[in-house]
Amino acid sequence: MGSKILIATYGSRGDVEPFLALALGLKARGHQVALATSTRIADWIGEWGIDFLPMSDAALAQIETEDGRTMLDGASGFLRRMMAARRMTAKAKPLATQMIEDAWAAAQGFAPDLIVFHPKILAGPHIAEKLGIPAILVFLQPMFVPTSAFPASGLPELPLPGWNRLSYKLVSLSFALYRKPVNSFRERIGLPPISSRDEVLEPRALAPLHVIHPVSEHVIPRPGDWPSHALICGNWRLPAPRDFLPDPALAAFLKAGPPPVYAGFGSMPAREPEKLGTMIMQAIRAAGQRGVIASGWGGMEAGNADDIHVIESAPHDWLFPRMAAVIHHGGAGTTAAGFHAGAPSVICPFGVDQPYWAQLSVRLGVGAKPVPRKAMTVERLAASITQAVEDPEIRKRARELGERLRAEDGVGDAIEIIEGRLEAK
Image (cartoon, rainbow, N blue to C red):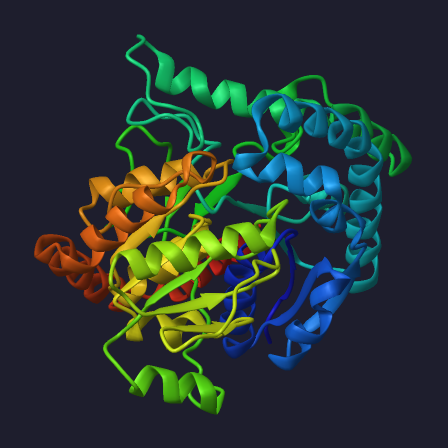
């Protein structure tokens, strides 16, 4: 008889898809699994046969507001972005409180034996403490467990003694902003208050908390100074879409010429989506390539032509192996999909941890020179597209990395860790 496992995550599709893949693996292993996340993707979760527990869409909807688009669009200008960020921050604590309440309601209804949670699910470890069950924290990129090997993802590499470890303290400060709503929740459920910023995600009663990073060691080697409870286990990938049939127009476009390049920025918003779409089309043409452009959640606007085909979305596992290169924002999930497909990358980071993945693609030798959104021009993007498509060394290394990643079983490795925690509780 399997255990009851609550998986809780929040954010864009890239924040949810790995957890859905884990849920499918756990269910296949005989466990009873429920996934708690935003209501906007309830139908998608249900299509995979995983029980869904609802969380408010309010926090995610903030990305689609004018301030959300301004803050995340790197071309908006520094001052305008900072003012938008200030207004967004003022709304953060009430939204966090709502998410805490949603997670608690999900846990009460499901009564899990173990919780697997994304760091945005601030209630995760505190619910586990209250219920007396183990919890596992999942970071899609290394930015929580300190190491001297590299700084927290999203922060720059600086030639300062001790900077790498210090950078993780800076990350913990960002979570410390939520200590008040967390303590209000703890008081309501009969737990003593936490006293330090580090306890927002790792309360003393649960320390040391197991932290899993679903990233391949071929991409990020496990640091030698990490403690035993910090783990890397390979990407969590959804099963390949065996029965996926592309739109006939997309299928015809792919057959009509050489492999095109893909361009899509997922949920990243643009204040001027038509202008961004025009720039992408011009860059693809300037590089002498055909293109498949995905409008995505962010709503990038472009038009069909003989050399350009526009889609809303398509499964990355199916689409990316058919591309000459993939142009994207550098989210953890999309980056992993590009690496997994063996396709050269052109990463155009908007912000957050995306510059980290952009630079990592270059260090691995599988990506062309990044083109940050705030500095994007037709000429710069065209030059990087040309480099990605025509550099034989980048193409070779991308292909080799993809072969290594496809040989891994990140979900299977994670399930062994989870079952070990269940046995040890």
